[in-house]
Image (cartoon, rainbow, N blue to C red):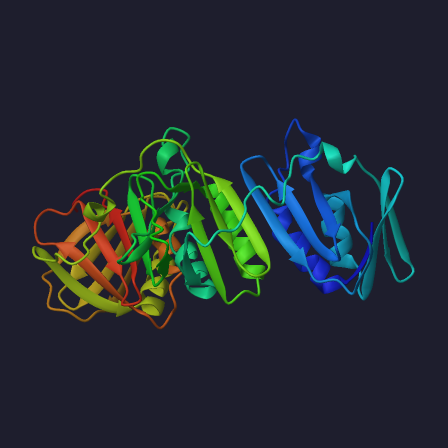
Amino acid sequence: MKITADSSALDNCVRAVSSACPTRTPQEILQSIKIECTDGVVSMVATDNVRTIVKHLDVIDAEEDGCVLIPAKQAAAIANSVSGDVSISCDGGAVVVKAGADKFRINTEPCEKHPADAGKFATSDYCHTFKRESFLTALRRVVFAASRSPGRYATDGVAFDFPVDGECYLVACDGSRTAAHLIGGESFKEHKCSTTTTVVPTVGMKSLLTVLSLSESDDISVSSRASDIVVFGDDFVFGCRLLEGRYPSPWRKMLVMDDTDGFYNISVSCAELLSAVRKSSIVSDTESLAVKCVFGAGQIHFERTESVVGSSSVSIAADGPGEESSVLMNLSLLREWLSTIHPEDIVRIDYPKTPLSKIQFSTDEGSYYSQGTMGKE
């Protein structure tokens, strides 16, 4: 095999697929990227046996078909450090990379030993289609809320709720908070995804974030199958095994969607709210302590007292007639969601008129975030 590609295109491709290469594994061959050239079409493939990423590489020239492995660590270092045209070829049991006066020869394993299969996750017209930017935004606004506890296996991922007809949501929760985002999509051949069965592991969703960020596709498609899911665009294919177990259902009960009876609400810009949350943590020796939060009466007030460091008191004006209510919250969790929202977006805060167990934050763009409180102040 012998191909020539621009260094920037090579770097983009390596960054996209290397997120599927495990840093630690008893199968060292999984730490390599497979480069395949067939009839002049070049693809890079990587897998950890849970997720598989195929990224198409635009080449300047493809002189010989074939296949070669290159360690992901060295591939990333080379692609990031060279410029201009880069040639990649096989030489016995090694891969040779040339860029200008630079030459790298890396010993590698035969391609036949690598389990990655570019055709395993075949694309299908049984799918939902979305705008790539919309799907990327939705994923960023929910993936942080997925459980990080091994004991919550079914919630250690992002759930897909894509009915044949109706609103499409990405959902994540960890028991103390729930994040959901509405995205506009279209179903083909009555394709649907259920949150109880279509849950993609967090590690896979973080890889997909990287792939989508580096893709040039305008539209992407999502196809859910019995045990895995395939997301594909014009220049990539991403496949991942689904988590076993049932996701909390119905997830909508964890949020205040349309039924806001029994709730007060106030509104404030995301930029102002995020700034206040950040200021409240200035006088702090840890971010895990509860913060006194007062909502209503035309304001939002955060008060924090540290026995060693000192105290802080931050207030901002808010729109809304809601009566004043005080609770304890972990604001470091809220800050994660606010950091994904556009600064100019208006955040609506719904808090119950009865004793508070959870508070919901939402935007008109279809983003919802509900967080449990740590008690009433």
